Image (cartoon, rainbow, N blue to C red):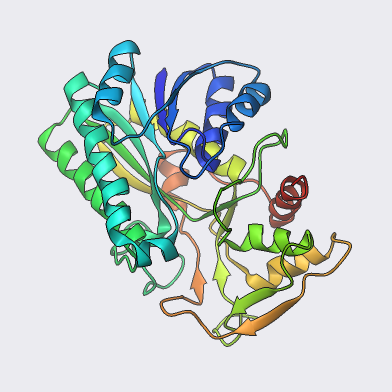
Length: 332
């Protein structure tokens, strides 16, 4: 198929392009490089052994989008482009609504004008909020607690409305849990122009000597060691879920669905630290800090719908996630 990838230079987008090229899809990608680096384009080509079309563009630029759609015969859009910092969204909500929601509206409007009727949307498990007991299924109510998460909910609702009024339009919302690791070639991985806020990159910065210690927010949760439990998924597993999603859009009689992409297992912060310490030369130092408002003790996916609808499940171990993350970040 001819695929248009928004946010193609980002962590997930770049990995998707490599695997999609290997599956013989034709790729047209765009990115504005607000949070990514241009050198990723060369690495994508090296990792895949194939070329693709790329535009430096923003999804809010309708004239550029029209040019891209007019020049390239697009069958399906995979929409990754998004600002994604929960903390930043709390302090600058208008930026997140303008970029994530406003940009998506312009993209969807252009798709409609150009007759493109299939989209995979990069959503997030953050749409569920913090009040549900795990494992969290797609039937749980949506209770976003940040502007970032709210922007994902709004876009999902827009897609639902589009599929209701246009029965030939198909959309699949993929709700990610916590992607980590890097590509098997070690040519691409998680890189950002911004200060890392996720656990795995922070641990790797400590191991690299860039930070002194890890702050663990809370050690009194109702978990086996008192620290928060989350569902981490290797980026290769996450991407294989997207490849399966293409098949779903082409074959399913449904015209919309929302599906979790997670391992279905939870790992505590201390468990992850201990796995890293099992192979690092110097142990990760940590200290406990008060709980953060809104944080849940245990969050992991019910992935039964992904198994039945996408014929997909994760395969990579926690040790593989940790080692691949360290190999990637130790290259810096």
